[in-house]
Each structure stands twice: as structure tokens, then as C-alpha cells.
Length: 279
Image (tube, rainbow, N blue to C red; front, side, top):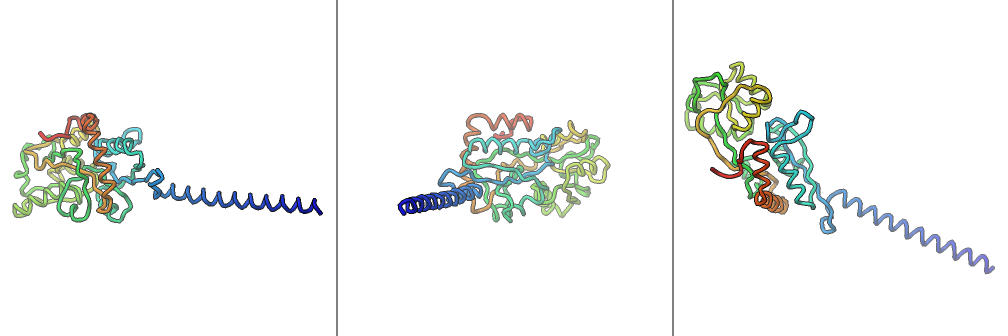
């Protein structure tokens, strides 16, 4: 009888230990799920941030000869990632025209694509405070073109710009003030723009000197910039309105990147000069 009681006690104890193990496993499983969802920031969980960028902007965000996504904006995000251990930044590449919609529908959390401020964007989204580049826009034509020396010479001619780009905003604003004198053509891909200018189907585009320098070296684009700078705007990252904390953290990281000279080095490496300060 005593022996049976002893066996019962052992079985009861083993059952209790098993229950404890199951409960512990459930608790551990719950913790793992929270960590993977990136919501348990109070316990040091790393939150994943999806950064929308492109692959068609020379020197800024593009695929190099080794198939790697790189460029000024891309490497700057990677530097920010190093300095914000509470976040993990991951890239999502897409066509430029889809970036703002993807941010609005929360498929991405941040846009890194040399984005300038305009009223329409400002009404919908949040810009960080620290500019990371000064973006010079100029008229671009074929090297053989001797007729167009400024935007005024584009009256009656075709100007190709990317849909939803700030270049398009500049062209549309100029047109509104000059009786729609320029025939604006909208396009998405950089290679298509080069081909259309080379073949004479369009006369010009609007871009930056560093992008044109890259295209001339990389694909023999045979382009040149002409005339005065049309805009010399500061560029920022764009976030959704409710991402106030993330915006603040990005600005903190950017300040330190500026102060230790890293931002100037990145600009010189990728853009050919220090475009981080106003002239």
C-alpha cells in the first residue's frame, strides 16, 4: 500500500512538472511572437522599418554591376541603421511613381529617394527636420544641342520628366506662368529618357549634374546641363504623419552623421561633391 502511494506521488509530481514546462513553453512562445512582430519595444525589441526606394536614380539609389542596391540615399540609410540599434531598416524597391502611394497605404514606412518638399506632399505626409542633401535641378539636353541654353529656349519644344517627380512640379509651375509654352511629356524610366533625347523625340529633361555625370560615364548618355539652376531645394526623408518618434530618431542620427563628417564623405563619394551644405 505504501509502495502504491509512493508511485502516486511520483506520478503527481511528474504531471506537475510537465504542466509547468508546457506553461513555460507557452510563455516563451508568446515572447517570441512579440519580438518577431516588433511591438515589444519596452523590452528592447528591434522594430523593423521598411524603406521605399528606387533602382533607376544614378548615384542615389541604383543596382551596381554586382547586382547590389547602393547609392547615396541607400548607404545613408545603412549608416542611420547602424546608429539606431532599436530599429532594423529594410529596403523595398519600386518605381518612383509608386513610392508615395506605398507610403500612404503603409506598405512602407519611409521614402529615401531625394524627396523635396512641396505643398501636396506636406499636406499628406511628415518630413524629417534635418535635410541631408541640397538638390540642384537644371535643364538637360543632348551634348550636340546648341539651341537650348536655358528653360526659356524650350518654348514650343518637348520636355520629358518623371511622373510625380519634383522636376515635373518645376516644369508645370513654369508652364503655368508662361502660357503652357513647353510640351511636357511624362515618363518613368531613366534609360527611356536618354534614348528619347538622343533620338530627338524630345528636346530636354530636368535633372541634377551628378546624375548626368554618372549617366555619361555609365551608358554614354551624351548629355549636358544648361542654364541657371531651376531649384536648389533641400531634400528629406518622408514618413507617415503618425511616425513622430521615428522621425525624431532619424533626425538624431542625421545630426551625428553630419557632425562627424560622414555625410560629407558619402556625398563626395557618391555625388562627386559635397552637396550637403548650401553654397
